[in-house]
Image 1 (tube, rainbow, N blue to C red):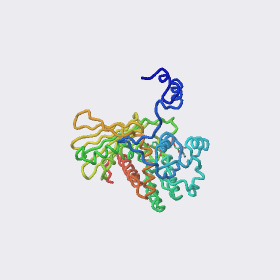
Image 2 (cartoon, rainbow, N blue to C red):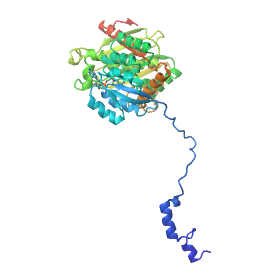
Image 3 (tube, protein in one colour):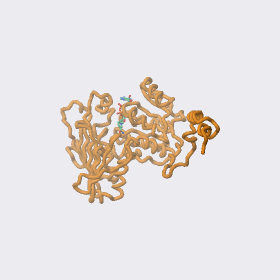
Image 4 (cartoon, helix red, strand yellow):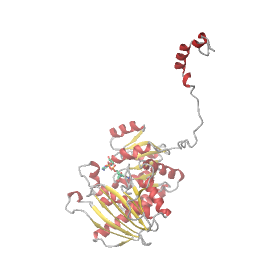
Length: 387
Ligand code: NAD
């Protein structure tokens, strides 16, 4: 039995009050901080790979809000330069993202001597895509060019020829090919979960506000290349082709917009289109600068269908699998915003290994060829055009 003295003294011979105060300051009461083994089921992330340096050309709405922030999540790509005609904006952004080099459009060709630039991302109006892509390729850089690839088939062909001559990769930034939900829907189609594919329908559009600055060039043919089908309709067209994964044999289209609307003096404001395929699959859709914003796809197989709405959003895509008339069960995948980092990392991998990007220049050319054929059809009131 402890006597009164032992009770008042701690184990180390210190009075108990002093011992408690000491434990509080040294942390002994809670034990010592010690390393622990990795818990079962927890994997460490892959270490960052050697990152390729990227220059972003054109610091507009999409570059600032989606493309550049996307690099923060990338682990094979890093921002090393900006190309802009606005030095103050470029400097401000460069400071925020730790980018040390800024080029103007006038000294753009000097990128050839910049060893920190491996890839160039063209985020300019469509009418400038071909020129800046070809100049970047001639400077020895790999190029990822925003959609739509260019204004005409001839421009797309010249871009592809420049990439071949320079032995560099050329990709078109069809980001949904890197978006987890789109990838999951494509996987289910390929796996046969819907049965034989029969029909895809897709709509993509928004109501163009001519007072919104990025809309100005979109409504002027020389910089826009074309109308709604170029800028927004291409999502449904390319999305349908991603799921069907076949080459169409005919297209047809009609214009669908109020002809007296002053917004559409030089570009079309809406197109309803169709494609047929030798296998019997068909696709149809709409593109508009006149209806409320939306982007959806529905793919019907013989056994089931999947509806995606929205299908090509930056932040929040949804898909449901339907076995028949039922309201459907959700198809789940990782968050959409990962598509931006996945796209540039995918292109960095293509550049490093010198193998074609998942969405190569040839895919961009295919889509411009189809869109131009749709316009030819619409000019003839919807005649069927062989492609
Ligand atoms: P924007 O008008 O906001 O940006 C265009 C940029 O190009 C600006 O920095 C502007 O200063 C620069 N520019 C250089 N020369 C110009 C000129 N003569 N006229 C106008 N601008 C000029 O447009 P945005 O919406 O950022 O579109 C840029 C590109 O990105 C386009 O190719 C567009 O199709 C593409 N985009 C892609 C997506 C997508 O989801 N993949 C979304 C939006 C835009």
